[in-house]
Amino acid sequence: MNLDWMAWTWETAAFFAAILALLLLMTALAVWRPETPRTGVLGIPTTRGDRLFLTLLGAAFIHLAWIGLTGLDAWYGSALSVLYGIAVFLLV
Amino acid sequence: MNDRPFDNRAWLLVLPVLAIVLFSALLPLMTVVNYSVQDSFGNNQFFWNGIGWYRELLDPSTDLGSRFFGALWRSLLFSAIILAIEVPLGIAVALCMPRDGWRLAATLVLMALPLLVPWNVVGTIWQVFARGDIGLFGHVVNALGIDYNYTAGILSAWFTIVIMDVWHWTSLVALLCYAGLRAIPDAFYQAARIDGASRLAVFRWIELPKLRRVLVIAVLLRFMDSFMIYTEPFVVTGGGPGNATTMLSIDLVKLALGQFDLGKAAAMSIVFNLIILAVCWVFYTVMTALDAEKQAEGPAKGAE
Image 1: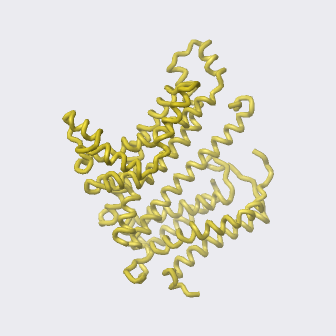
Image 2 (image 1 turned 60 degrees about the vertical axis):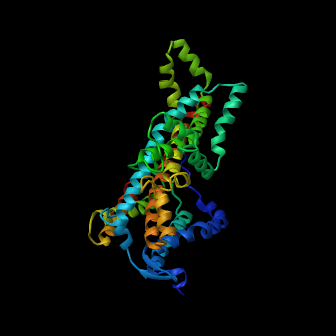
């Protein structure tokens, strides 16, 4: 595949492939393992999809805060985001 | 809350829409993400820059960072001022509106008028209206002995774009509140009269609580719109004097289309977009929570 077209890079391709994979996983889970929403620490009913959305949005802000507030490597921010995502899926 | 599991297979029916959105919105958004990690020169040459632009953007000591945070605070300040003025004013106007008859029709038409004027026309109207030499408003204010010139004074420029937005959008808040007020059943007012409640008490304990739902909509609509404002300040002040009225969207266009710094502009777009996405999520969540609350109240109380 020619990635030069529209200046695509393998990094962005990998990023979006990961998100697409997550969405497909969620779709598959929704079809074969239907669920009911539950109310967590936020006091609002959430489904798996809501929790994934909160994880991704929160992860973006964690990365931005990490990049903006610390001069450290951004991968630590990614690790923090994974912890945050686990917390969201367990608690929210 | 029903305990039936969601049957999400129905979502497969929206696949055609998804395909269209993919081409019109998702692919361009992905392009922006892709640009934000690269530096570009003319002739379609791109170079990998990783998170470099984000680092620069989020560091206020750099040129790009100071620009971004300056514009971000200006946008937030603008939204705060707009909400502080338009929401109370809109409620006040709604309370003063006639309840029926030809006066109501006339009021509704007059109030809807500013909402129908296109943004750039609003900008042009105010650009001329507020000028000191040929504009009625600017001329009158200057004649009163007040130094008012929106192309030179920072306060004058802010005053102009704020009053322009108030002129343009207070009607929306007022109309929403009016709809909310009309939905309050007469029984509430009768009960208040029997209790001998004052006008203030009626407002505080009947009207304001019943307006909560429309006020949430009004606040969030006005916040989003004012936070993303572009056309009116661009037409009136062009972001000036200096950078005094350069809101986020204006700065973004300057960066992307003026300087053609695609990487920097893309990084700024992504952060801007994330802020708006977060606010949208809050909006959506609050709306659904209020809906659920209303349904839980049952048909007896939720007759409106």
